[in-house]
Amino acid sequence: MAFKFVSLLRASALVSAVALIPAATAGLAAVDARSGPEFSKLMAVYERIKTSYVEPVDDDKLIKGAINGMLAALDPHSSYLDARDFENLRTQTDGSYGGLGLSVTMDDGAVKVIAPTKGSPADAAGVKAGDYITHINGKLIFGGTLDEAVDQMRGPPGTTISLTLFRSGRDEPIDVKITRQVIELKPVDWKVEGNVGVISVSSFSANVGSEVLDAFKQVKTKTGGRVTGLVLDLRGNPGGLLDQAVALSDLFLDHGVIVSQRGRYPRDNETYNAESMTPGDIAKGIPMVVLINEGSASASEIVAGALQDQHRAVLMGQRSFGKGSVQTLMPLTRDTALKLTTARYYTPSGRSVQEGGIDPDIAVPQISDPDLRKRAQRFYRESDLRGHLINEIKDDKDLERDRVQDPRFKMTPDELKTKGIDDFQLYYALQTLGRTVPQSLAARKR
Image (tube, rainbow, N blue to C red; front, side, top):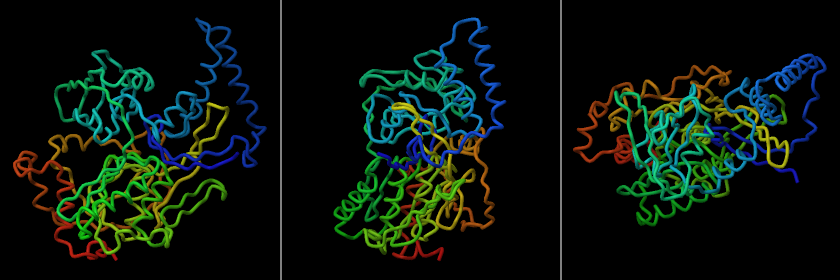
């Protein structure tokens, strides 16, 4: 049975938007006859390798290498998924595994941390986005494959692993010991500060929309129904399922476009709208802040862009990752598939977040991070990926910004620590909501 499963996943440790469609469709174009000579070159290389290489080479290795080479020439998010990658895909959306709780990618032969999962062993050990993992258990891993590094980091819960990290801003390597745990996908967490609810979403795996709805109900219960503000924390969220990004956005919107996607052909175009009756804005009349940073990608940017363009929330923090393309997952066999970039997505106002990301309405640096200033020079975003898609829309519209430097931004991490502030961005959001009359914050951009 043909079906469609649209998602924005971090597959092979990179954020991506994936739609699953049958391999054989009427839309597949025939190979241009002019491609024949080029295929002859490919076969000639294959035959030379088979007959003349210093060692025998398996066909599987050559074919997979040829496929990966073609896809790598396109963009960073198109790839070939073998049986192992399929299993990883399932794990990343609704499974669990024994490991550290890290999203990583390859950067010029080095393993680079995109983000640790909130509350994971890696997060508790102090691993940060942008760190390079140079050694695992004392063994240099530079020049290996991402799969090899991930295999070494995963393992039975309760076992210990040593990582050596290089962090921009630090002169010496950082050694950490981490005990593996079962990493359960628990993407939604909540707490109450005063009468302000704080809902944190670490990924967009299955059922996130309903879990955020439940979290908001618990916030209302905890405050006795007197919620004066709401913070939606999407920092470090790499993305996930598109339908869950739409579902979460719909919780806080009565009507209007949430996101649209446009591809090469009209059949690839689609628009997702808020459903006015189910359930409407669950936090109607409550001012709302959305926190984002350089680790907020893909599905996170869809939610942030929708709530920003629809004037439902004010965005605070730092510019997002900037991943605005959609990949289609095309099955080749029972356990292999092609993940191919087929469309771009756009916010309700027609903005593409590709490359540039989403700018916050109020830029708030995370000055409680002692390494912020030096690490900021090496923040890792979509525009840093080799072969990334170019943003074809040039938007010159200036977003609303604070024109005067807030004196609180000048405080040092040590000064903040003495005041009991370990998360300045969240603190700033809570302080802002505390000074805000209901309705006024979200209405400031109208």
